[in-house]
Length: 150
Length: 214
Image (tube, rainbow over all chains, first blue to last red; front, top):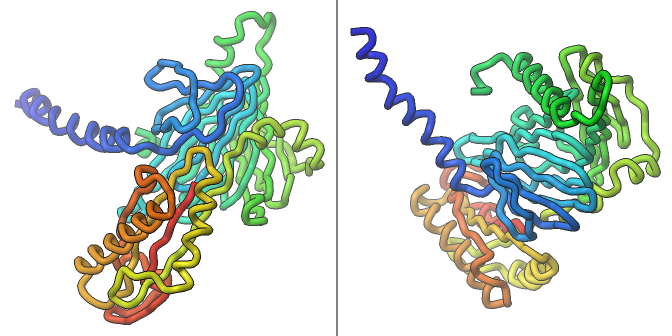
C-alpha cells in the first residue's frame, strides 16, 4: 500500500518540478551585445562561438579566450561583461514583476568581470546573488567588478 | 533545490565545488594548490552617477563596500580582508578589459496620451525622433514598448487600451524607420501606475507608454 502510494505520487512530482523549468527555458534572459576576439557560449555542455545578437538563456555559461571579451544585457537591464580568459555562469534569471518572480544568480568562475545592476536590483535586491569561489556578493543597486585569481 | 536548503550550506557547497573544479583543472601545477582569491571592487554606475553598496560574505565573515572603488580581497579560508580603496589607475589596470566590454546603458522613454485615446500628446510625438535615433545607434537593439492607463474604467478594458497604446507606438516607431521585428509590445493596463491614485481617477501621467531601449 505504502509503495503504491509512493509511485502514484511520482508523476505529479515530476510534473511540478518540470513545468517551471520548461517555462523559464523558453524565455530568453538577454542578448549578447559585445563580442571581441574569442568568446563562447556554453549551453548543455556544448561550447559554441558567441556572436553579437545571440540570445542568452538561464543556465548558459559565457567564456572568453586569451584575446576575448564579451558583454551581455539582460532583460531587466542588468549588464555583465567579461575580460580575457574569463568565465561566468548565469545560474538563475527570473524577471516577471507582475507575478513576483524575480531572481538573479551569477557564478563568477574565473577571470575578470564587470556587473551593473538593473531592475531586479531595484525591485528585489535580496533576490540577487553574485557567487565567486571565495565569497558571495549581495548588491544594493550598484556597479562592481570582480577578479577571480588562481 | 536551492530554495529548500539552508543558504549557508548552499554557499559553502558552491565554494567547495568551485575550488575543486579549479584544482582538477590545473593539474600542471605541482605542489599544494593555492587557494583561489577574489578581488571585489565597488564602482560608480556611470549612467546614473550613483554608487550603491555591496556585501561581500563567506562563512568566516562579511564586509560592506559603500564608497566608490572600495575593494576587498576574499579568500576561501578566512574572512574578507578589510576595505582598501583602489586608485582609478588600479581599476583600469585590473578591470579595464571587462569594463570596456560593457554594453551601452539601457535607456527609458515615456510617452503620454490623450484621455481614452491612443493618440500621443504633441510633446510626446516630438520625442519619437529621439527614440529612433537612440535605437539606430545600437548594433543589436532590443526595444520593449509597455502600455499603461489611468484607473478610469474597468481593468480589462484598460488592459486592452494599454495594448492599443503600445501597438500604436510600435506602428509610429516602425513608420519612423525602425525594424518592427525588433519591437516587443505589452500592456500593464491600470495595474502599474506612475502616480498612485484611487480607482476611477483621471490622471494624465498614468496614461502613458514606457519604452525600454537596450
